[in-house]
Length: 460
Ligand SMILES: Cc1cc2nc3c(=O)[nH]c(=O)nc-3n(C[C@H](O)[C@H](O)[C@H](O)COP(=O)(O)OP(=O)(O)OC[C@H]3O[C@@H](n4cnc5c(N)ncnc54)[C@H](O)[C@@H]3O)c2cc1C
Image (cartoon, rainbow, N blue to C red; front, side, top):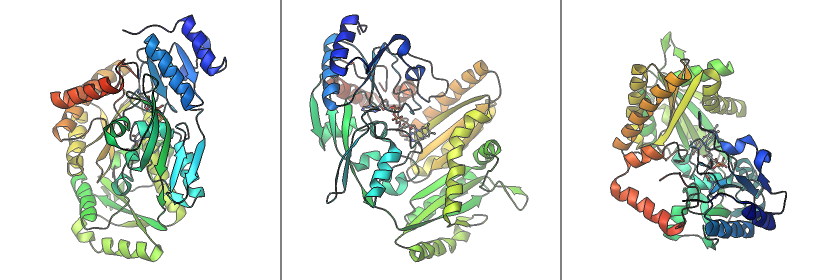
């Protein structure tokens, strides 16, 4: 179906990008063959091009649609679903060099950036203007183009929503090279979160908001998973509007703590093992307002059935909590011989059911299963580790993942709701969607990318 990148095509690419920004053969770095997907196979592109402008991307797409060459867009390659990996060969279009802040409209509070600007730099640019860009999936060296293309969420989605909620408009290049600016409508909605399968996003305008003046963190340890998740729902439903309500299983706290040497969160209380800890972030207009909310929540302690309430209200304590939390993800691979993960969203009230299901199933398959979750927005991260042989782990994890994704579908969850679908979750997405919903996805793909050259082998 696709053509190879011929020497004639390379010559044309050099005409668009110049000699230096067309990389071929041994000069292509090994990183372009994979992203951060654990155990993902390597797929080398035939060439890499580094774009500097929308016009260059448009010229590239025109050339590739005529020549039937696949184009896989790459931001920072921090994805964990294989989204930026060129599974069908062809070209990788790197947008990391398109890393300029284009403008800031003070009145509209709109920050316009190129897609290669890193999330940490978007946040810093917002702060320079005394404002706030809330979405934060955890990996701050990801590009904003990658965040928009996976509709990245993360812990604060509970109060602030996902990346999609901040995109005011975007310049996109379709697979035939057409350039359009979109700010609403079906195509706009489809392109956000489409993982480079429908269009290349070359400019993004982001809405910034007022930064909360004060915040503090409350930790609530529990003897069981259900009470922990239920307490988060109780706090949310009581109208306290926490920014974050993070469920943290003690197995993951302990495992990561053993790797970092500092678990931070409670593991035992009064000689008994804690099952899970809830970390709640409260925000307010000033410290007094935050204190008032914390006191009101503390008054509910009996209803919440927590073992204790711990307060983190100094910058050091807050940083320590988040450092310990952020270590969960990175500790998995360094702490065990084999590790893999499942990242999804489910309706918030089913988080405990999914976690318990995964833990019981893991025990049957001799996998150590650990989890943390963003209660309220329903993002769940399930990690499975083992020190068995790699082949044995691969077989056990495949069976585990199939059953967990089926459970996610049964609970009405979204397989790609955290980290996207890429190629890693493609089969599970197909199994989870109804025929009608799957046909709708295929229809959108056919209408926006009729040549099928944008990121083939992904999502559907
Ligand atoms: C430690 C760690 C924690 C993480 N936590 C989370 C998390 O909580 N939630 C979450 O969702 N993800 C998480 N991720 C995954 C990853 O960081 C995000 O998916 C991120 O948004 C990807 O950005 P990127 O620039 O690395 O994109 P890439 O990995 O390069 O690409 C991701 C996808 O977007 C497409 N794409 C990239 N840029 C564009 C563009 N401009 N136009 C069109 N398509 C494009 C690619 O083709 C690919 O399909 C985590 C990763 C790590 C390593």
